[in-house]
Image: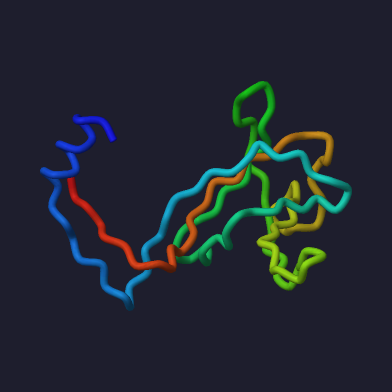
Length: 122
């Protein structure tokens, strides 16, 4: 850690992290190419949309082009039996028309951090 980073950390106030209140971490993943099934596999489950919104974007020419819609697909597993965090993507809000699989997509979401953590206020 640099000396500047250490001085900022030392001057920060430590806020308590209550175990019954979840800590939401922001995460951006992608750009992804999708297959014929239009699934995007994430590292974590996004939190419910009424708590924090998940955004999926069409990503082309190194820039966001338009918003895409998605639906969580629970119950997917890899060959080893581990659960996959999967979203199927669609062009329309009603989730009826599958998104174009020749394009790349970016996912911006929050997930619930399940380990113990300290929160610093700088």
